[in-house]
Amino acid sequence: MVNTLLFISAIIILLAILLTLYRFIKGPTAPDRLVAFDVMTVSSLALIGLIAKFSSRIIYLDVAIVYGLLSFLGVIIVSRYFERGL
Image (tube, rainbow, N blue to C red):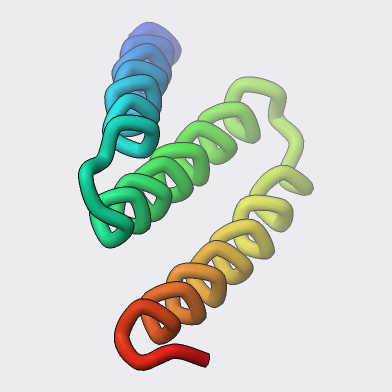
């Protein structure tokens, strides 16, 4: 039962990534694209967590932590650039 729910949540996360990818490509402004990028990274972090659970490999969680930190720094740098330039 738990594996079924996790599989359904993986499908929902993939759907969210696809919808956000549309906003990332179509986004009318750069801040819209930045928010879409951030949502895609958070969704992919959840997907990496599910992959770690399905494959029973804890090392993927370390990868997710590093990916999340790099994504956070990237979003901060780009938003600061939009705000007042580097």
